[in-house]
Length: 453
Image (cartoon, rainbow, N blue to C red):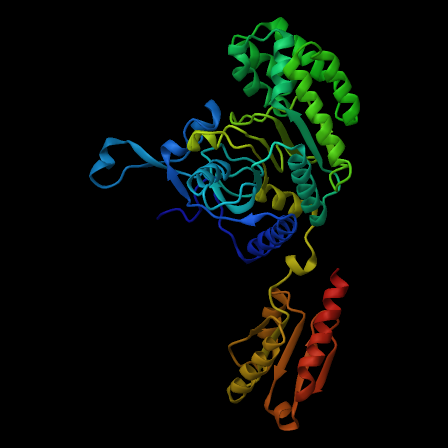
């Protein structure tokens, strides 16, 4: 017998899971649209040449490849691959439709991506990303706007303890240069530094050694990072960075850019959450400037991240287009919100406001008509399909669905021109004139929602 479990690193989504996901996506979409971002979608798979070489050594290993089909399948050659992220497909889209898109283009995209990663808590092989990107400007206003939008999303979802770590790729380059790491080892050093929050200083020191980086150079960079604690305010960290990379022109310019971003963000919802973190590396190789990542307590990994990638679109277009983006990991957000009990009761509860039941088959037509009337005013209405005089089964079913109101249609009630409404939370039961049923049910449901808030 075949296993009924989904493939490792993937999940089945039951009704409660879908409601939580749609709630988060609704908040994300609303905020992104209010910040002027427009929606796009791209195919689930891309030509393999589109994806390979865009994510660095580690990323290339995690791309799900699709073998050529039909008579070519036996060759074991892949010509397609599942989407690894939403940024590279976006770069392809911008290059393909450059003549029809505005010069300054802001887009959001909420779709699943796939990575052949090792599954862990909050880490899956199939997961949704919620991306925003702005193309066509090098202004630090873009970074500040992204930081503000992401901060507003997380605040509206109920997060209060998040930090947005901010760094710059040229700051990292300058730091490694000053520490004595040769340029041809920078890529290896960044891959190791990207794991600092997961494996600690000793682990990174070991990674440096394994990659042939001089221990003295590794110590100089790690000693500096160890002295920059997470509680330091951005200006204090930037002052220390300025001193450390003094004399390195590109590094000094990058620190200046970070100061501009921090200053601009200080007047936005991101003000209380941005922290400059020189250890932030982000492994993707296409970043060229500022990089960002969201951290919350008790989560190994981040809720999302992004950065500036001014050269990526040029790989498809033949000329560089400045771009910057941020991606929120929907699954990790949902995992943390579920564990912390952050979802409103209306999301965690059932998907019906009223359940209509009938006492014998002669009442079926009237029960369906009542359900239809309740739906016309925007209420979510379920109907119990079997007649039940004792109400035990419909009551149990309504309770399992967390439906607050049960509308009972019976022959005696119909003869009197009434319907019985039972409030399953307060256990209050009243007979209501047929003409007043919709209004009374609306009031009961509204009171239940208010109590749940």
